[in-house]
Image (cartoon, rainbow, N blue to C red; front, top):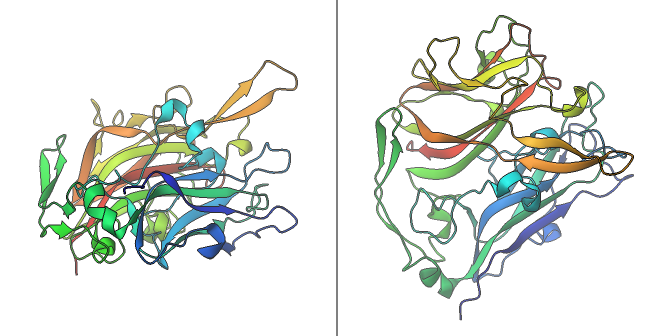
Length: 383
């Protein structure tokens, strides 16, 4: 009898003070500690995550839960899924707190389309690894409690065929970039969906090429911008970011591709910039692919999304809304999801990267700068 339903797959709560997580340290709970173990005849797929971020004791100031990585069967996934756990730039908020219910998910569950079913898959266990950031400019590491929950489905072996509409992951499939009139064919033999092949499906850790994975990444500007409205690149080899998993500059050949589906920008730590919600000298945000800016404008200077303090449809993360019905004013945590692009953009066999520009006054460096976040699908065709 079919019994699969959306359920909690893992649940980790950082212990309350005085058992604090020190700055620049990792918390690595075991799968057993988070309830993330499966029976031998079960398989799991993760659809979405929820992060309750740490804030200081009064509940007013952000703390730096710098990175949350999901660990599938002992394999960390930070090279393609790396989530910010800071309140201002939170990428996976609690579901009921998301404005307009625009939940970011890793993929569509129990689906046989490889480009839709990019959920994270595991056969034995799942847990998380959580990095507390540095203590700087009045922002501490994750010294207060935070919580991470992973949601998805668990199937018995005998349920897989019926849960996945016959049990075949169908190929070939195609990545389409209608805006740039480009298409990438992904050729692979169809994959039977069963307990033995589970980790070889999209989102699994033992895929054959071409590999298909969800992609979600954030980046802080590690340097100040030039103060001249020039392009700032989040490029790891050029020290534009300090962590390789924050790199947002891709120099791809024909063996690598990224379909960009969402792009957002947020103040890194709202509580450093009162009043909350004010962007520090930011003017524009977007992508540059094969030399062209996206979205395009009438001039190079007017290309990209306007993301200043007056107009910013790329804003995501914490929305500093307040309730004025009682004194004192009470903060209400509401979050905006990472905005989707009108049409996905394909980076393949070319150079593509995320760009921000200042308004003529430099954007400060991390932690007083901005955080960009990007979502999409990553394709790897290299052996």
